[in-house]
Structures are given as C-alpha cells and as structure tokens.
Length: 246
Image (cartoon, rainbow, N blue to C red; front, side, top):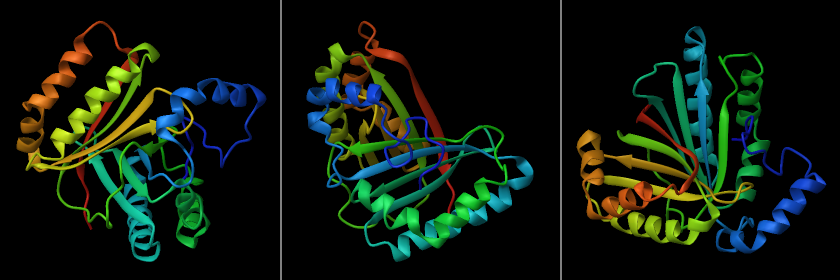
C-alpha cells in the first residue's frame, strides 16, 4: 500500500539524473538483492494517528487488509499492530510475490483508493513512513494468517565496507531464527532505492519468544558484530509492537 515514502519508490517519483547515476554506481553491490519484479517484495509502514481518528483509521485499514488478502492472489501478508508504549502509533507489514503485484493490482483497487482518500483528511500527527524492500530470501509458500504476536520492525544502515560480513551474520541469524519454536517470522531485505539500508519484520510468540531469540547462539553472533567497531552508518531503528487482530 503506497504512502508517503521515506525512500521514494520509482512508481511515485521520476528518477532524476543524479539518482539514476547513483543507482548505476551501486549496481554491483545491489546485484544480490535484485529489485526486479520477480523478487518477493515487502513494506514496513509507521503511522502516528490522532487519538480522535483512530476508530476511522482502524476501520479503513482492516477493510483494506481483508480485501487485499481475500481478493489478491499474490498478496502474501498484511499485518497490523500497535506500538507497545504509544497508543497512537501503529505499524503495517506487507508482503507480495513481487513489487509489480503491489503496484498492480493492489494500488489500483477501490479499497486502496478509499485508504488514500482517508489519508487526505489529515488523520496523522506527522507524515507516515513507508519503507519498501526486496526480500533476501524466499517469500512464504502460502498466505500468512495474522496471529497474536510480539513484533519488531527494524531498520539497519550498514557501512559499505562491512556489507559482506553483515550479510553472513544476518543469513546465519535468519537460519537460526527459523528454527526457534517461538519465532513465527523473520523476514528481511534491502531497501529498493537505498543500498546498504536493510529492513526486518520479526514475530514472536509472546515476550518469552523474543527473550528466547535474544538468548540464542545465532543472536550472540549478531551482538558481537553489532558491538565490534562501528558497523552502522546511522543508529539502528527498532519498533516494537503487538498484533491487532479483527
């Protein structure tokens, strides 16, 4: 569901000569995370909603979620949650079989237009943030059903010189996380427009699931990498939230 993007998607803005040249410069390091229409595609979105507009927001979003998941065969996941500390902050996570599936049919539906119309009524206290990324792994084999969970949406901006080490560490972390009995999901990938910016969506069964993940050996490898030198181009962003079910 396209919004006001922090990293502007190609579908919403013209590529300037400068941005095109930047893309060409970074093409070699982007090769492993192709943004072609054939790769699984995801979004992490953050909204800060005015208190008196929350009921409207939730009604519009729940209808969008229901319609998307029941009428779009290539929509794989559409998850809504609320911040654990701030009742006015909400998060989405969406996954599609490809970026093209998000652009068409999703962005050309009546329920999408209803969302855009609602967003035009100024229901937010500040601009919402949407991050688009290509998954670095296969998408789910079938549609993901929303369940009770403790969730994280994460952004990591990595210095180019530690990119390969970072990728090895994260692949190891995902492989281990996928085997955790209390880890429901560990999705990650690279921003479609900004090389070395990575986004994550994680889901755990309760706080005990998150605690078990943080105590796992593969997470210790990540902690060692994160604390060694200064691998981040800017501080990591971590949002923690709970699932909102119908």
